[in-house]
Length: 257
Image (cartoon, rainbow, N blue to C red; front, side, top):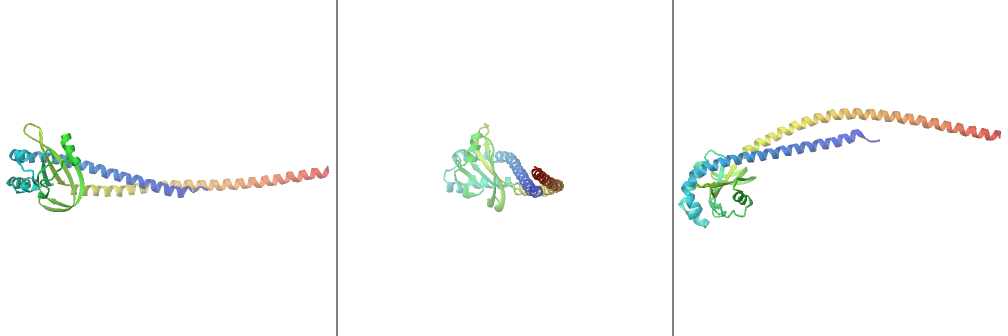
């Protein structure tokens, strides 16, 4: 006999678990995507503020006169001046690192001096920001991160490449702002935890209600099966008795003949 209750217990349990996991995963990813967009919008606003302070003073140096050698760049007084301005601008903000690029991908300034002089032209996010003339952001986890105010550990970082427009409105360079999104990710993780608890309770209650219904249906089916089995057994006995009676009558008729 088909074991309805056992089949339901396994199949429905796995189905509800799969649905819960999918819902949690979709909610988490959607929340993270929304968070990245929010941080990107904040970075766009901050990049404009940075450009208003940095670009009028250092635009020509960054785009034209700065040397192409990393060591020479680090020794330039302009690098120290930009660094001082950058540190004052990010005070109290979520921005933990700043880079400034030429359009060809050359890193003219970075708050982490080891990055100065590196070439970013081959990175897809940089190339997209230049080609699309639009902000491009990436999100990731950094176990160790050298920020503008010192080393950070276990941080969720949103990196945004942001075009810098000159007085004529044309793009003359790019900022890359690194924002610490750890607090936002922790808030999302906490929301996911409560969502998981809520789904467990809701699906557990649903599972329990359906289990009671299926168990009752299974009991009805078993009783009907038992009744049917008894009825069939009685009919088989009656048929056997009838068959024997017919055979006895046949033998009796044959004996008379």
